[in-house]
Length: 145
Image (cartoon, rainbow, N blue to C red; front, top):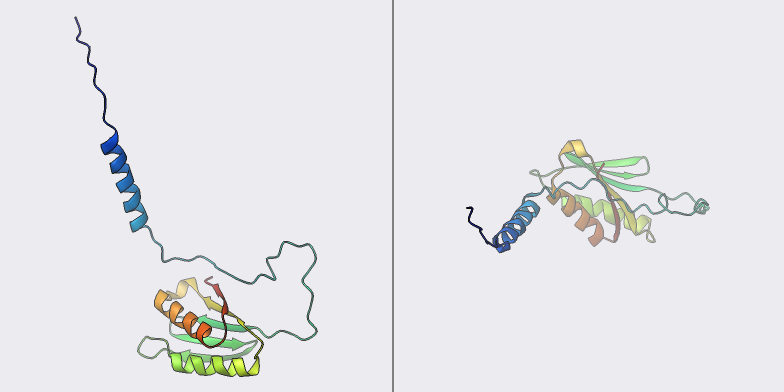
């Protein structure tokens, strides 16, 4: 004759183990890769009609962070800023940004680009972003592709 076993399995330790595993998964995930964040709302509007064209051509202000230097472009006119001891030359960057602000006082937008294959570090991206925002361009669109 077989003996009946009446055992209740305590699930509390298993729930705690799974909660710990979820926390470890979140902590070890790779968070430093931003695929694309663009604030160019004119090209992403949901309306069927194209945005109204302004009478004067709007100059595109772009800052591109590359492996060995920073390129600053005002439409086709560009300037290269080499790194100083592998760090962003904030003084030279601020000088050019201030020139742009004097030239275009009503502009608040600028596009910050990086290339995925150039291995731009996050601290360089933030240094350039902070310099742009601190010198009169609070609407910075970041494009990392």
